[in-house]
Image 1 (spheres, chains in turn orange, blue):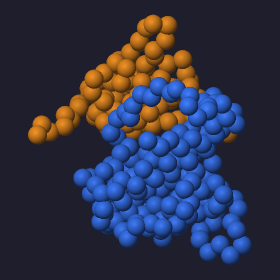
Image 2 (image 1 turned 45 degrees about the horizontal axis):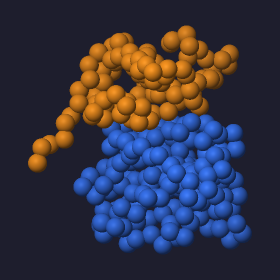
Image 3 (image 1 turned 180 degrees about the horizontal axis):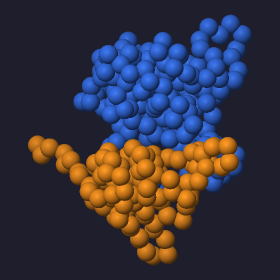
Image 4 (image 1 turned 45 degrees about the vertical axis):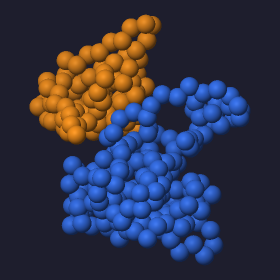
Length: 104
Length: 176
């Protein structure tokens, strides 16, 4: 388990109540991407688990938005927009697969 | 457009929206964003909604859409709130459409003569008041993080597929 997600003595997960869904990234990422990335299937670079970004665990009370794998807690995406700079770290996302809407 | 704001006393935005903002003030609005935690009649059903506190808000929009589209998709809403006074749009929920069933679970305070659910929503309550896994409902769960965690695991224990369950957690606050 990642050090920053350490449990308190007694086993209580101190981060549990802060956890949101990756779905809550949508508004922030709309600043950068023309297509909503949140439904995209993402493969975690740490453990290989695959699922929609929407269902990863989001920690939104850090200096950056931090998205972690729900399986291994590894960081999959970090995003911040501050001081005239957007920073995006996708090194924890091995692959993103977007399903485009069918064309009429 | 209708916005529902749950005022959190130690919040940053909701006290401003509920106490400082005046009629006539200008607001700049971005969005709506995304299509993940969304239901429209084209997605079919049955539709199972489970709400904790102000987590009911997206479901109120879904019920309005269901009504506006005269949809016959069967819908069930199980809504956990602290007390009847904290139930959002109570009158609207008291007159659901033909294919919609609404159940309230009051966790802290129930009025005299209340015959509905009381106490925390657990697996037994979900088993009684939500669509069974065999009906293969699309399940949406929205509420405080602890509530959503508990409901989503209980639904999986009941036999629902995690792929059919969409969740929207809004943190530690909000009242169930």
